Amino acid sequence: MAIAGNTAMHHLLLGLPVRQLGRAPYVPAVCEALEEKARDLGFKCASGAMAQLLPNVGGYVGGDHVAALLATEERWRERTAIVMDIGTNTEISLIHGGGIRTVSCPSGPALEGGHISCGMRAAEGAIERVAFEDGRIVVKTIADSDPVGLCGSGVLDAIAALLEAGVLDRRGRMGRGPLVHEQGDHREALIAPGVALTQKDVRAVQLAKAAIRAGIDMLLAAAGLNELAIERVVIAGAFGAYLRVESAIAIGLLPALPLERFEQVGNAAGLGVRMALASGERRERAKALAAQCHYLELGSLPGFQKTFLSRIGFV
Image (cartoon, helix red, strand yellow):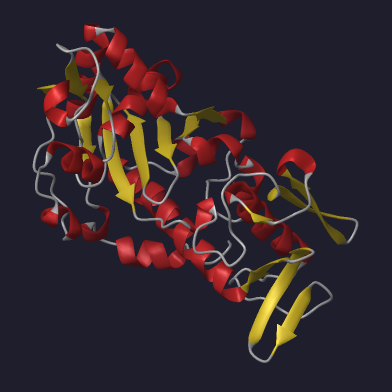
């Protein structure tokens, strides 16, 4: 077996203490690659099977990010590149000059539809695409069913569409207009019948996108680079496979680079752990990549708070 996961899942599986992962600076009990008997971990498979656990990097950057780096190496080797997996916790690595700098961004579930009043998983009826066309909001749902709610890619599109429509200003404030329903102090923008984004939803997205963009900014600052130096942005993960890059740029989640520099690769961690399962050489490469990563504790970096606050708005 080969196993890769974030540091919390890794520690829970092994029965390692996790208390320190809930307190800054979030230090894992162990980072190196491990080999355990599969049966000792509670797995029922081949009687003599061993479980190979990919190494962690630090903080909340675990073996799943190492697996993603392993799977995408051909895409970023010998380039200045960003590799990122956007989720409730977003891992970002900047590859430059033979080194890898890595941060973990506590971005929350908003970009995946969580903690959003009309948010839902990517299932039938979820709005996955939103656009502002000819003065109206146009949506596309999964399986072309009646709209039920917004999944992650739909949330991102909806914010971008509301910005384009002038419903939201660059500070994220929802104004008045035909698309906005108002009850006292409560305002919500109608996306489809029965599906609306509230001002509170917009603020949740702002916090998530500010955390991620601040992570990118701090990595670039640590390397002495500006965003135009990025030659490739590799976006991994289920959410990353479906987000519309144009919308991510429009709301300030991603740098405004030419679209050809972005590559969406889907479940890179899943591919990387399969590579590690099939090859001892790949497992050794995963160890080398993890050792190469220089982990930066985002919240303790000078200027992080100022950078985070500067990225709250949609500018």
